[in-house]
Amino acid sequence: MTAPGLAAANLGYAHRHLLGIEGLSADEISFLLDLSENYVELSRRGNKKTALLRGLTIINLFFESSTRTRTSFELAGKRLGADVINMSIAWSSIKKGETLIDTAMTLNAMHPDVLVVRHPDSGAVKLLSEKVTCAVINAGDGSHEHPTQALLDGLTIRRRTGRLEGLIVAICGDILHSRVARSNIHLLGIMGARVRVVAPPTLLPAAVERLGVEVFFDMKEALKDCDIVMMLRLQTERMHGTFVPSTREYFRFYGLDADKLKAAKPDASIMHPGPMNRGIEIDSELADDIDRSLIREQVEMGVAVRMACLDALTQDLRGHNLAVAAVDPEVGAKVGAKVGSGS
Ligand code: NCD
Image 1: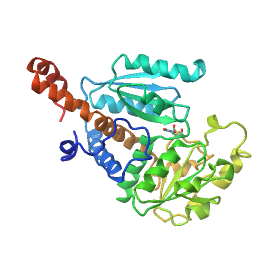
Image 2: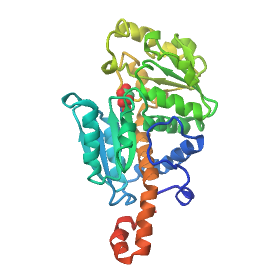
Image 3: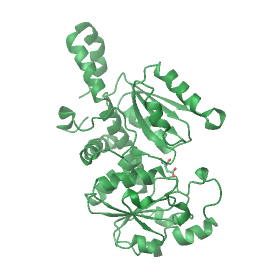
Image 4: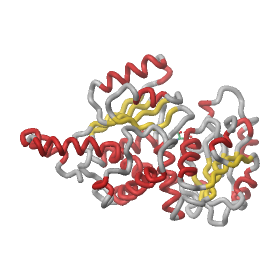
């Protein structure tokens, strides 16, 4: 189930892990987005299952609670025919650093092929990737990166507007704590979009303009003539202290409502990674407006993008399996069943 020409070339994504968007090239991002398009089609079919990853094991290792990201990785792995194990670890009940490495080594000894990891500390997933022998996908590390979210956002935007280059995208709200914002700023910048960020000063990282964005403190100014309005959740679980006077005041100045949206292009689309706080960062009716809101589409694209990432990161592995089958008929007979219907 790979796009014609892509599997044969197998040159599209040449890294062992997917830890972040920073440092990827425009070609690599386009490759992953193109590959995802195939999986959008597959996921809309009655029979959604392929045998591409049959025999491979994926472990979802979540040190932070998650509904949509974990579920979509699980669905993605299962639709590709892999064995998927979910491990949720209550962060409060374990000791930091030591346990992360211990857990990684324990899991590594079970020979998973891909580890999908979410962790509340920035940098923890990279550290883990240095200790294990399998591919690692970052499903969100602290306020650092969430690469598959940016890819699914990029795919959603590209499908709606036909391009990323030259678009004006406003990312609004709690930029300071948002790994979604960081990954999107990188991806949109690499793909040639113009990114604006808008937030109260307390919710902007120091020197954010160094990431190549334009900074605004006023929503209407930030939204002026933009193509995409990307809202973020107020991430109170990462806040130590008070960052906004009250949620009512926050909504008044930074919540997206019909009046503020008028500043954007007439056909501008609205996005939100979820989970949403209706009435705090976004007006409930706007979130459900089928003409303007891409929020449901984002969820759908999430599964397709994760299938593409799992496909891309295991292409070498499947190649090796096939090579084994070719040189040793006995092993090949066993492995053949494993890789037989993968293309
Ligand atoms: C995001 C996350 O976890 O960073 N959500 C998600 O992946 N669906 C954004 C958020 O939690 O606000």
